[in-house]
Length: 102
Length: 327
Image 1 (cartoon, chains in turn purple, cyan):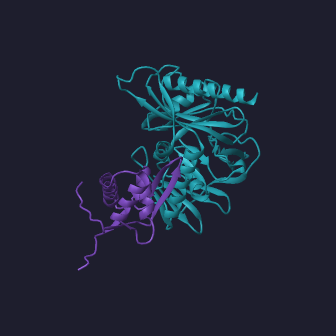
Image 2 (spheres, chains in turn brown, red):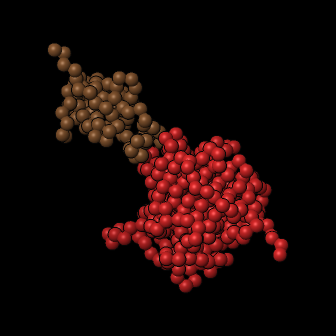
Image 3 (tube, one colour):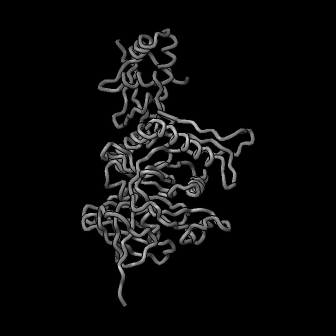
């Protein structure tokens, strides 16, 4: 992992992404890059959470994965960070660093 | 001298032409009546939707959409107008025309026009055969995977050749919600060996500088243009010596099925966003509703290649199971 994220960092998906479900799996079309991506179950849950106005913070994503998959916070954090990093690197999600509270 | 008018099959269009075209003669009821004519087609100033170097690496294929005239194609020096309003295809041959008009129409003009104009239409880089009650099986795979060879060998096992190298699919809401294949003029593109396709009624080089022949075959589908798609076989030959044993045929689903279909689906280089969204959704719909099988095998050049034996056995097992179910 190369990027460092903090709990308050916020992730938001681009709006020109097309999602289709085939059987139990999900495929995404990136219209701008004209590429396809497959999402596994964990990735799909994270995707749904950050899809929509304002996106979602890293801390909330980790909490949702912990609750849904009953895994440790450390494991969930590893999964979430790895996936959001991929999204940011692929240019599918925008990332805004936590605002300083002063 | 009297000019004879022929009625030809261009997918599900009945094409009337005073010039002889190497397409199947139309049989069955017309769905639409179009006219082919030779005439001037001026350059386009419309929206460019496709711009690609053709497979021979010499000609550019460009496609524009105009509100006034329709769809304009330019391929090398050849220009074609697809006029949906008047149902006319106008053809202006370039000085360098070395490809039959029929091939330009069937391989470029009609497929691109159909996927642009008709919702739910997609084209796959694939070959297809049909049998019994209008059902079709499609073979997808990379260039050289053996799609045409598989189709030829299935034909020799009693199947009808429906398309080679390019398969048109109507995945829109047809009655019963079925996915259908629109048959082309039966023809095969193969490297020539003596007696490769003795069944052929005509044979010609695909392009003068490419050692591949285009064989036209008799149309045995009895005028049926639409066929329900019963399955897609994704051909995956290997030259790996370590791959021992018989061919593997297994059903794939979800992402794997979709990605295999998406990888072989025809795309436009500059297709508008809404069009590309629709195309993606349609292809995923095909992956959801048609069984997809991955076939891995060692290449061989016998009359009974491993993949053909595996596919034929699979189909005969399925048919036996279906008949069992009916009883």
